[in-house]
Image 1 (cartoon, chains in turn orange, brown):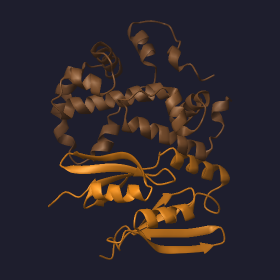
Image 2 (cartoon, rainbow over the protein chains, first blue to last red):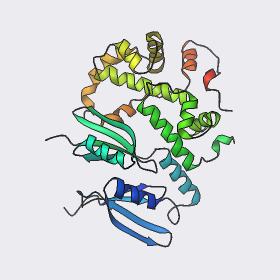
Image 3 (tube, rainbow over the protein chains, first blue to last red):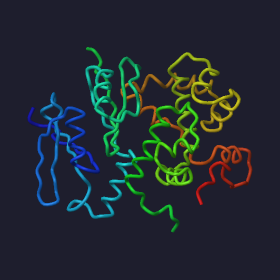
Image 4 (spheres, rainbow over the protein chains, first blue to last red):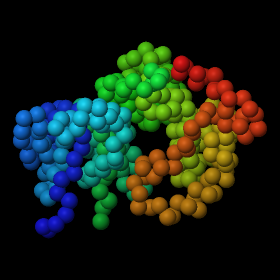
Length: 136
Length: 166
């Protein structure tokens, strides 16, 4: 596939903290981490999804003025950003593994609608739903 | 301009979100302001004011919307009796449940159950949690005020338990 969505970004409050969370606690890999002055382009990848990068961006200069950055930081911290969904083979096992690493779960695994799902947040407040892949 | 327009510290908002998450995860439990304030690491008075500024509704009213949302889900997705659903969603009496449910949704629990089941088939492709959130009751005024308005009253005073915001 040569066409499609390549990068989708999240806003985070601290890029070092976000990199540590997505790599050490969730098992993602760093794809790109480059700086130009205050600006830092940081993306991570799911190990089984090489065609997609998740960007971890901090609101602020030079792309945002101070008031806009403050608003975006507040929206992230209030959990007001859009839904994120992570698909896993085994939701309970992933939950146990991630919880042992200190991930903040907001909903324990629940079996319903023919699958199992749980919810967690990243340190900034971005909310993830983790859903067990339905068996084909 | 009131103090409510002062931007809130993102670190405080993140801790308020943690209290909101706890309510979401266990809306059937009792959530006095003091308990929620402890989750957020702030004083009870500060918590109530800050929560309303952050999320637009007082914490008690937010709890009610989540309980009704849960009750609606149980009515739609389970065969539990309405009495069981009342207790499982956090009410201590069936009468209070039925009255509050009707005041907020405009329907009795039994009517809601029949209608929700008839509509359920069309929505199979939306993840269940978001579907549930989309159907959360929009409780923009106090339940007591809603009752007064429907009774034709003219009293504009808010629920006495929700007047903590100066």
